[in-house]
Length: 359
Image 1: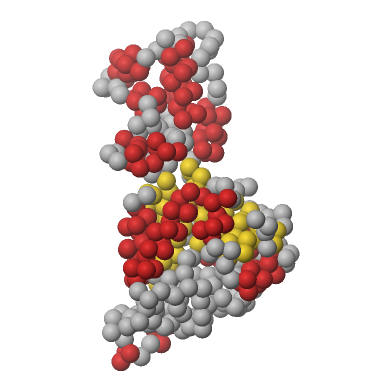
Image 2: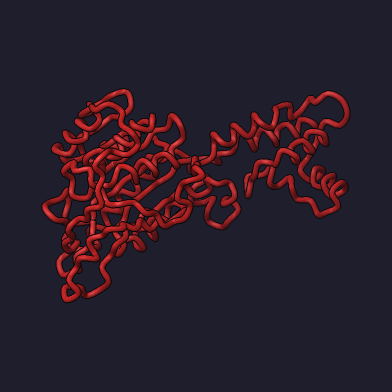
């Protein structure tokens, strides 16, 4: 499919993500805000009821799963009243990592008339974070996790596990022999070989334990086995596992404080650039690529480009593709666009008969 727009960092496709995404390969991060209903003005999609909307969410989830690398991160924005159901749906196929509460300091909820409310008005939005089951290595020993994921896509740390296992075997050391030597030297029950050599609950040895393993299997003299230095193994490990890196000054809990978008790019539920930039920075490794299958006005692409990362955007409304293309054509910007405000958005019912909500 021919891109609507393309530069060295960002590619935009005009079309339905269910049709476009399967042909694009896999990505390091999927970061998206799917449509949930009618908001002030108009919107991509409108459903008559929640079951119809949730049915589409299930189809989107299948598409996103197929677009995730084995060590990828999924970020999914959700309305507070829907987040629980969507998170339960995600958990059937992916491993939930966090349920972030995005607190909007100047939410429109504070301006609501008490007489108009029939339930507390939300001043938050939820951001669901997930990875493939088994992506952290330790989950594979839990009943069902291996069946859910590992058999289909392979154990992501297999290159490292296989190196350790094969080298020990070549030196004539079985797992039980390693456990016996560990017990004899350390004075405890052993069992470490299962973590180092087995798939279930695998873990990279610490540097001290790796050096012990090297000395044990090689005996005296020159190392003929396990010749790789620990730092080399650690770098490979970091490259294989899901990327997540916080700076000292970053928000470290699952309650985030970002003002609603003031970018003014014409989309009714546009997210603030500083929020999307933060999410992209902490979860997309250097040189990585982000997919946003509901790109809107292109904030994910703008954030990726400003951070020196890559992004693929899919948007079904051509008018938003045009807005996004114009934003991408600008020079690389600072991490926060000037002019961000704390203005809230007027909410209207998601579905007939429901309370107004805040975008």
